[in-house]
Image (cartoon, rainbow, N blue to C red; front, side, top):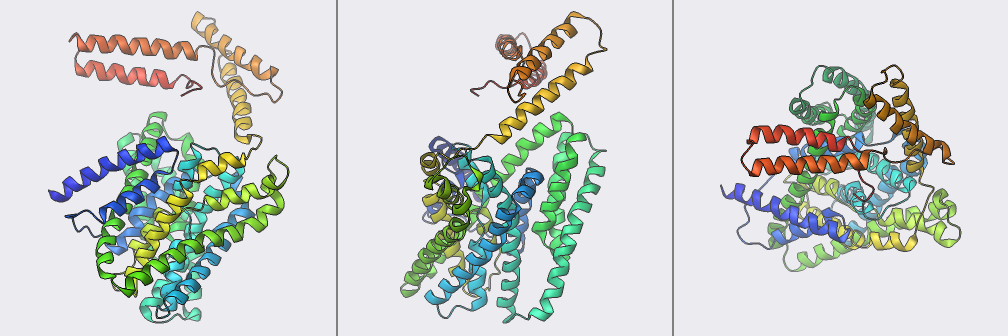
Length: 511
């Protein structure tokens, strides 16, 4: 019962912290990390422990599937050099730099353990960066690079992590023995993901119930990860390629009602997993803090501070020389345009749930485990607080702008959609309701024709009136409910009807 009460309290506190983060325009993981620190000083916290073998599957499988589903293959192909450079090059360089620093600060630490620490803190977390971008928009190309990097850098870092953990536990590493199996696992993952995605799409054609669909999505996410790991493939690559394959084919077979519910559930799941990850690592910090005393404590603090500085400086050193030469194609001229994109990309490299999950997944008897976990959490906390709270002001100062390619594509695609909708009404008769609908689409298309780029307006002429009428209808039904003239069953049926009617109207520009 005590653990259940703690879980309820933690979730409620997390909602309050996330709300505070939104008001400040900061990434909510930064406040969750602070909450995790607070738990380390709260007496009577339940001793919750997670099986290390479960940590990566629990935290990464749903998060990566959700991110992979939203990935734009076209945009990633257009920016593959920058994405590959960050996802592989920056991860490798950061891992090496942190390993060297760790060996200098803690000379007795095995090299494999130093590399593990580097791999744990190397991958930035897109969840934190994208939370900031909701309040401080970044040019589309930079946001695309961040999203693409977040999908691939996890694979690169976890591959290094797996190999180094195995070497640390076995006392050595033999390239000739490991390399063939490793390469075979990567190739198998790249092939298995799309094949499983096609099979999943075929299966979901037969499932129409929203609740069953969502449960199957989670079962498949965890099942694919566990199967990939059992077969010594890359869980990250398998999940990401699976998600990208499904995302390209699912819209044509998924009902709108199921899609709306599914998106809401997955957003909630990612939030809860972030909460759970930071709670679990915060609870582990307390006994680690007790065990690190005297000279060990000062050594741990020195390593944590040095690791935080290393991950920040290394990313700046990797990104600025390349982006400073091109400005990544943004419109501004001058030094700000050359250095601004690089500064934004570098400063958005906050660590988050991937680093926390990798630290929690270390075996209990891993050498210097306490030191690695403590340092990793300090790196997460430092980047989320220092970079997370200053990224929004930095973006405001840099004033990075592009030509709004997404807005242009949306406007042109909307015009094509309105034309197709109008054409579909050509044989629908001359009833007044049909004529009214035709008039709406013709009005919207006239605006598109008058626009230089053929962009249609964001809403149809009747959308504002439709929203007002639905609101009035909802108020009338609420009044009937309060007066006791209708019961709950009737009210909820009508409420659902009005919800879908309101969703049918394009949202107001200020909402």
